[in-house]
Image (cartoon, rainbow, N blue to C red):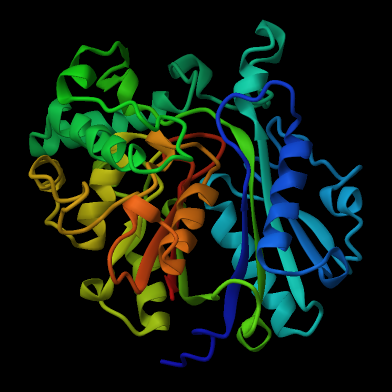
Length: 395
């Protein structure tokens, strides 16, 4: 295997705004502030940034493309290229990898990748501005009950319960475990608000089998990264976090009606490519940052990556393996479930924090290698099939 890509590029700047409920700020403002913070974090100036990527959740559904008043123009960045990139919860990973191609070709020296969200605020501005994509012609999901993301993800959870005997309490232990991590992270929206499994079980059932506490948060805020070559990363303000490997998988290559695909994500090709490129094995991973839009997705990834056998994710989590002090620290900042929902920018940012050793009370001791996942769409959703990405970071 040619390992030419490994360790050739690094994340040198991280910017995360305050997260949660900020109705007085637009998505553009939050994204711009995150980019400013990332550039400052890297010890760079606006004049140093010559490439920018606007990362979006959905480039065609209801999220505006935001070409005008783009964040590089607001900040006065002398960029040579700027464009939109959208792919749901895998957009951070895809944006980082896209940035490395421009760096490799010598078309940029420092690239800033930024995401901004006013999702919570838009949901609470009135019924005419709710957080729902514009309906597309030809979509057949409406007549089958398509209302929200939970309409699809809940089917995956219920199938896993049917196939393997997974229980609601085991799903709930994912939420309890991640809340323990969030309570060690002062920047998490649910910091200082621990929960018990009884709290999960008594929370409202919204789309069976999901209780309210099985859902990820809806968040305002912004996250951004600065990426450059390993050579330029030397001597900057913060220690570089190197990108060791990357992989992706698309479930559209499989038959959507095959029931086996309702209890797994397309981890296999993604993991194989990323681990091979990085030259590592599962045992080398010190900390994992999973895309956790719902609790069941964490179980699937624990199984599909190989931390436990297929169908044993529930007991594995119930035994305390992913919480502080467990065998594999998962979503150490609280994840999408308990910190904030910035697509896969959330796990990617926490991966950078852990690799820098900046986690404070939640820092995983001697952590050197981090696996970050991204996930977008579902195999049975008409509008977008499911993508899965794997990014390997190291100190």
